[in-house]
Amino acid sequence: MGPTEAGQPQLRSVKIYVDGEDLTFLDDEVYVPNFLLRVGLTLRALDDWPDLAPHAAVLGTDPRVLHQRLVAESEHDPILASWDERLSFLEWGEITFPFHSFLFRFGDRMWLTARHREGGLRVAQVEPAEVRDIVERAHRAVADDYADHRRRAGLD
Image (tube, rainbow, N blue to C red; front, top):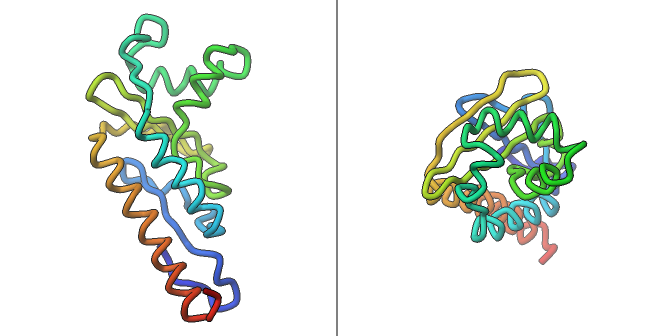
């Protein structure tokens, strides 16, 4: 997270990395209230993230293939479209528009996939507790910084 800009206190620099690749290299500026709302929705969604193991016969279990199927076929397949919507991850505003990202859970194993329109597909196996911790820490850091700024500016 970058510092508050003096002229635009509701904007912050936020970088998102997956498997070592900066997915926000084209635009890392977020409108804080919208960002906090979207990250909060992600935290709530993590409580009930779908387990794909019962659907493996239809969807498959390879996160690379599943990512590619969702991106390529969900526009024409209503079943895949519903999975695309439910499995999309890192939907946090304008900075995430240039890439597709999904979080796949099969039992107690999870994979985060992401492809920037200008890069290759990244796949990282992740621990569910670590995903939650990282998202919570990002939310808390931005929220605390924004609240501190609002207090200093006399807005709260």
